[in-house]
Length: 181
Image (cartoon, rainbow, N blue to C red; front, side):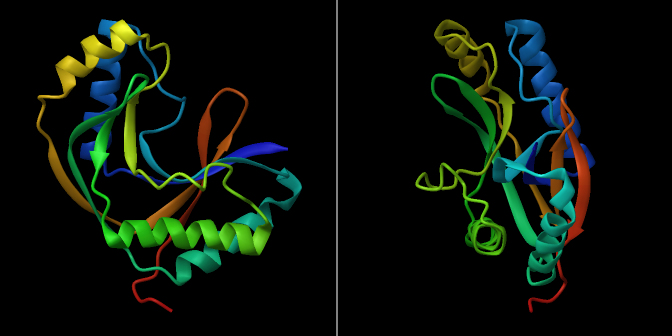
């Protein structure tokens, strides 16, 4: 079994800003993030057989064909105290519907159940989550909480990421339809 997850990747400018922030926090405070490109998680990591990955990709393709592109807005920084700092993604109805629909498609089509589905979806872009002690969290959060960033983009694809034993790699980008089915 391998680990996979489904996410939205960021446009180059926002990705560069997220990486710059991750590196700044790493250099100043010794923090880190999962070894993945900056992203918004739609379906958290799950185990799946590599021999059946074609079925997974086909299910995602079918889902993508029925979903329209989604506008995404970033509004400042936020935190899941005391361990995670992130770029705040606005909880828009379209983004919430995309995530909920994906959860249903994975569960009903493939039996992939999100172990944390009882939690409400909190879209975010993690900039620090590893090696954070409470004192480091307080220092880093004091630096980020007053920073202002406003950014909007339209996502036109969902992405399947696969863990290769060292980090997360993009396995496949699945376009969203220009027209809902």
